Length: 149
Image (cartoon, rainbow, N blue to C red; front, side):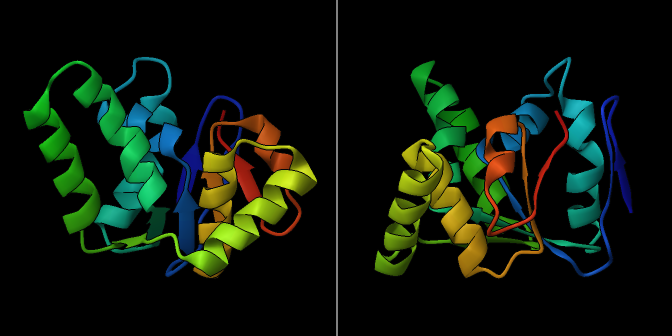
């Protein structure tokens, strides 16, 4: 499976576990004019059962914030269902071990806490890589961080 963007080509091996940051999910769900297509192959591969996607509960909070900010409870419920009911998606809770790892990542790389939590969750899940739209996160060394931005 190859996910293509104007800036990069990323190959995903069958049965790979991919942790995904919030922004790619938001761009895809909202069909963002500029960025949705960059992540389409990733999510289509998961829908086809070719890869497993792992996200943190933090990603759910960030994805739902947009619809809720606009008072759109129906869309928020639809997004929640999409993230929690898909067969090849796993949502991992933040526990004390993930929180401690996130604190260490935050201090080491000077990154925002939500980003640190999502990367710590990816590490907990033994993800093969972490897909993000934030180039700043590519300096994290504990995990292969891939940006399609």
